[in-house]
Length: 485
Image 1 (cartoon, rainbow, N blue to C red):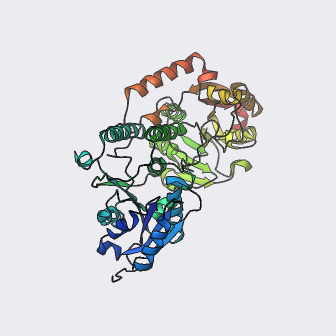
Image 2 (image 1 turned 180 degrees about the vertical axis):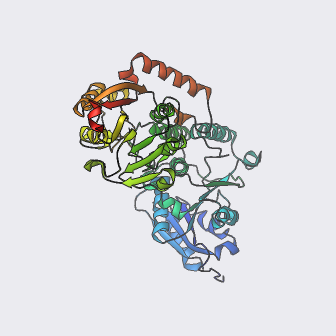
Image 3 (image 1 turned 90 degrees about the horizontal axis):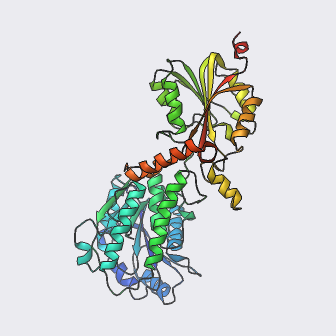
């Protein structure tokens, strides 16, 4: 077999996950198309502590094949997900550009490997999934049992609805990934079980990676299925729901990507929407956005005609394009030189991130012009969720939300008012926001979500200190005239 690999072409690896596949492994590898095999940079056979001679068959095959084969045998069974983790880590360490997941039992046709990798090679995708559902009737014609077909369709529809995606199938194990995309997501934190594949889809979606599907043939032979269908269905549904609730700030799952940049809270009644409404009622003026993150909120304010200066400890990509000016500074040390005489200074979800919020608030107050206002939003620690976590002895930090692991201070209503008083600020108004339920409506404005939002708003109005998710306060300095003399 002639080697026609070139240095300019992407390096492609094939990860063969194998468990008790001594009978099928060699037959599966024999089915690799010659033209594709000549371009492969590595074939990684990961034997997951099989009870049969899978490892020995792999070694024997590698000794006689011109393919660049590496055979690895785990001393202990790591599970379907754990086996993939090993292979992807090898792909990253070897500097491969593309890795294809191939099952050693031959259930997924090796003959279409060129089609699986093509969208990534062409720069059109970060991940490619083979789908048995794209061609109507092909799954059943290929021998997929009716109960599996129905279960697949129901689960896929449910996952699409919750995630806001439109995949034809979530449950195919025939996949190709850009190794660079894998390196950007925390797949090492995923489960070792069969729902690893669902979690990696969620991670790709969260990271806004490009996913392309291609149709693949369906084949069901005499291979042994190790999947407990009921457990699998429960796990994949739990994963998508956990991901969605994590976007509201509930949960500590490390496998869920946590973006450094804070997004725009655009839903009705959110802290950002409340701030935008307040700014919309004011004539164009000079605004300081403290803790501006990527400038998404400031960009909206700027579009209203205001001159917006942003300050943050990190400089996110594009922030200078969204604002009139940006200054990078450590807010623990107070405000940098950003000028004064501001009409409005905004601290949206900022004071909970500093050790001395009253000192930062006083510093901001000195930068206001005559009649200027501070607008501050911060989470409500008196909300039912952290109360429940404390009462049940399960208090811990989450990846985001009220119990965000980066928060240094927590505020109940009484504690927040005490902080404002220490900063010599009068409260002009104090509002409460509801839960960020819009995360359940991405891609699908569902009636049930709107009803849930209305119910949550009713509860917030009924008992704001218990059901209010965030405070939004409008403040004026005490004796503010003295600051502008």
